[in-house]
Length: 149
Length: 426
Image (cartoon, rainbow over all chains, first blue to last red; front, side, top):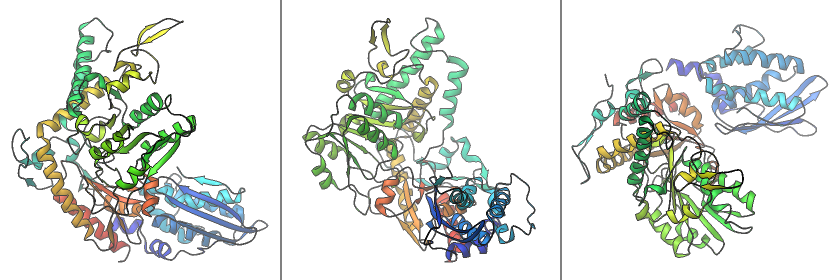
């Protein structure tokens, strides 16, 4: 069971069951759709900006535990950050889950997101973990549909 | 050493050439099954509807072809070319026999079911279909029996009509009969559903369609691996299947077409081997079946496919079907008994497939967790998104059995599903 616990950490299971910021945003929030055709994960993400700052972030959608928890934890992590900080965090997160760039798990910028470190042992699940982040990037660059296939 | 204990089902059919069905002995024929995965777990391969593993007989036939026989077919005057041609055409005869077709020239070698359906859509349907005509399919089709018809409809102005299934995953025959109308030019449907395993009563369906003079194409990709097929008894006009799901190699499959249809069709692709004579002014087509086989075919693949069909014929359909039916029944009961599990099309007549969902858990998470136990299943939409929409699920987990699977492998799956419940706190 230990490999299982590495992947499905309690924090992930908790966010899967009770996703945070799981609602649409009203008004002139920017919006993008994300889709992983391989497994059918689908989400819509809203970002409300105040200048450079991401004032509020919300999402709705359905998918596996990894994708849902990742979206939920991402909204918590980027809320209040600047766009540049959010982009930098995505790069850090990407390195963590793909194992492509060595990431210090103790890097304080990662915070709770470090629970996704186990994903790097499951290459097919990397897309689940990064779907919300790709969608965030799409929303910030004007909104469109992204597909992680 | 084989980690799985023997499971034996006594001989059930008259067709069996030899003994009781000994799954342990048969597993020895499949080298790939002897391995462990995920850090020492015995491999339980339950993803056979995606592709089946290959027996030594198939692997050896391909190796033998390349080490002793390889040459191009229908061309050379030399000995190797003669032998390669006779191996390739011999493979065609084996496929013809396996499908119960009347003549070798009714068997066209293609890359697989998908290519066979596209061939019929483009070479048979496209010149014959007019704006407003209808192509009838069903809600349980694989994308490969949906998209080629959508392309055709885009090209011709024809309309795609979809026959409904019941909530239990069974084709609604009354509705189908009603939809077989004046404008229907072709009925194209699966013999067996890839996502649910449901067996369609194809003989009766063909009778219904033919009573209205509507030809029928059957997608046999999931049927050929699990039951004897007799295209003349079924009466269909076209029958498509893939070698790789029936223990043969990837990249080879066949289209059966009634000679009267194939004769009146123009070629689909142009190139070498499909011509009788070529000048810059005029080219005449080769005879059947080569008219539809442009370019150098997958000769070794055809030889491997014939070896696979021979392998199954040697064991005999009686014992294989009896064994698979018993195992599927046990697997269905065992999987359905796990808390939170719902088996789709449970009451439908099925082969091979247990398609299921677990309450509150995405199928992808199920797939990952059982994989850590060495159990390979498919999780997703199974290339049948409209069917998933119809059944109101995003995706399902699918365990699909073959003749070499065992009770112990089903136990490993069920153990994995119990862990899913533990992880997700049921």
